[in-house]
Image 1 (cartoon, helix red, strand yellow):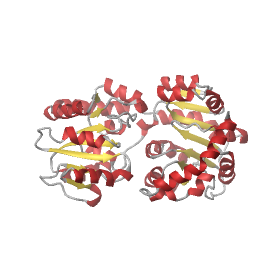
Image 2: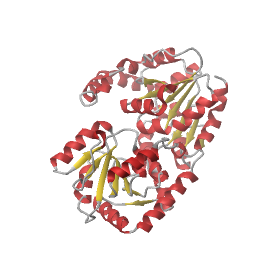
Image 3: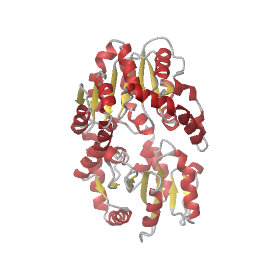
Image 4: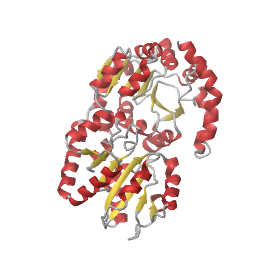
Amino acid sequence: MRALYTLLWLLALPAMFLYLRWRGRKQPEYRLHWRERLGWAPALPAGPVIWLHTVSVGETRAAAPLVGVLRQRRPDATILLSHTTPTGRTTAVEVFGDHIRQTYLPYDLPTAINRFLNRSHPGIAIFMETEVWPNLYAACAKRGIPAYLVNARLSERSARGYGRIAGLIRPALASLAGIAAQTEADAGRLAGLGAAAVIVTGNIKFDVAAPPDTYQRAEVLRKTFSGRFVFLAASTRDGEEELILDTCLELGIPDLLLVIVPRHPQRFDEVAALLESRGVEFARRSRHEPVTRETEVFLGDSMGEMAAFYAASDVAFIGGSLLPLGGQNLIEAADMGCPVLIGPHTWNFLDATERAIDCGAALRITDAEDLARSVKRLHQDAGARHAMAEAGMHFSRAHQGATDKVMKLLEPALARL
C-alpha cells in the first residue's frame, strides 16, 4: 500500500509546486526555500542533531517549553525545526531567535526524505501533534533514528479517516519509538490504529509561558483602547468575521470596542478590505492608529501579541469554532484571565475545551446570535466575568507538567545521541 501511496505523491508533485506558486501570489514566502521541500536541508554544524517538526504557528509556539528543556538537557546538540507553512517558520524566528536551525519538511517521497536525512543526520526525530508520514517514519526506522509523536491528538473524525487507510497508517504508527498522547481518548484512538507504545502526558500547551513583555504590551493596548469594553474575536477564520460583524456591532453597548485578530496573517488585508466595504470605522494595530470615539473595530494585524490582546480584553471569542473548522486553542486566553466564549465546533481541542467549560472558565455558544447575547450578558455582569477569569487561571495552572512527562519518554534516546 505504501508503494501506491508513493506513486500518488509522485503524480501529485507538479500540482504541489503549482500550489506553492499560487499561494505565493498573496504570501510570497511560499515561493522561497522550495528546494528544502525536496530534501535539500541546510548545512548544519558538526555534532548531534535533534529534529523537531512543528507544522505551523500553533505547533511552533506549543513546542517552546519542549525546546527550552531540550536545550538544557543537550546544550551540545543542534535543534533543527522543520515546518510546513511560512507562518510557522516566521513564528520560530520570533520565539526561538538564532537558538535553532530551520527547514521545510520534505515531501513524503523516498528520494526527498533520504536526501534530507543524509544532509541533516538527526539522532532523534520528534513530531508534534497530528503528523503521520508513512515514508518518513519508515526511513527513520530503517536508519535506526528513534522517532516520537508527542503532544499527540487524534479526533474521532481524523481517526475515522485514517481507519479507511489502515493498511498504510498501522505500520507507520507501529514504527514509532513512542507516542505521548494528550488524553486517554487520544491514546485509545491511536492504539486502535496500530500505535504500540502510547502513554498519556497531557497537553504541552499548558506549559507555554507568555512572552516576558506581555503585560507591558497589554498595558499599551489598554491605553490605546481608552477604557472601552473590549470584546476580542481571536484567531478568526474565513467567514467568521462576517458573522461577528453582522451580530456583534449593534449590541446596545455604548462603550463597545470589537477587536478582531485573524488567525492567519495573510488575511489581515482581506479583513481590512471587508471592514472598508461595510463602512466600518476601524483602526489597525500595524499602523499604530488611535482608537477614537468613532472607532468600532480594532484590527489586530500584528504577530506575537495574542497573549497581550487576551490580557487587555474583557471577553474573548475563540475563532475556528463558529463554523465547522475544528476550533482553536483556548488555553492562552484562560491563562491570561480572559473569560472565554467558544462555538459548537471544537473537535481539534475538545478535551481542553470541555474541561474549561466544566470548571467555569468558558461558555459554549451555539451560533453568532447566541455569541452576541452572551457578550451583552457578560458586559452587564462584572462578577461573572471575574469568576470566569479566576477559573481560567486556575484551569491553566492545574494542567501544567506535560513537558516533564514527555522528556521522560525522550530521555533514553537523548542519552544515546
